[in-house]
Image 1 (cartoon, rainbow, N blue to C red):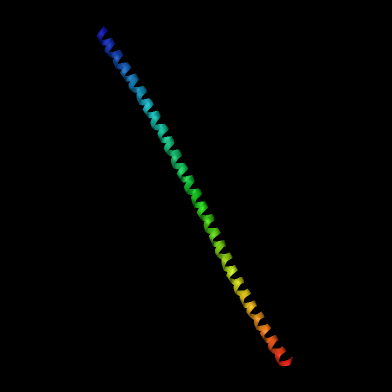
Image 2 (image 1 turned 180 degrees about the vertical axis):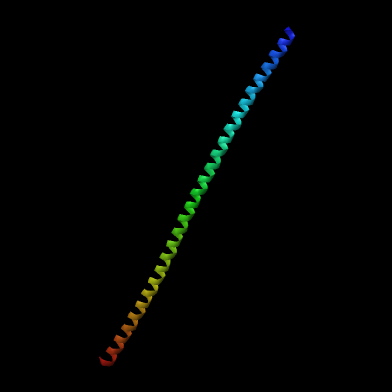
Length: 100
């Protein structure tokens, strides 16, 4: 009976230690899962931020294109005005030369 009690006690202790190890292992797995979920959430947040930055960059590029187009049109208008002014100056000189 003494030996049987000792075997039972050893079995109980083994079960207890294996349960404690299993609980510790489960806790470590849960913590690892939490870290993984946090990392996935961080990656998602970074992707969203990157998409927002890409959208802003696209909007800025569109505004820049529009500004360059407006500048090109303004330069064309200015060149046309200079050309017209030069033609008017030539006509004025011609009239002075003809009519004195």
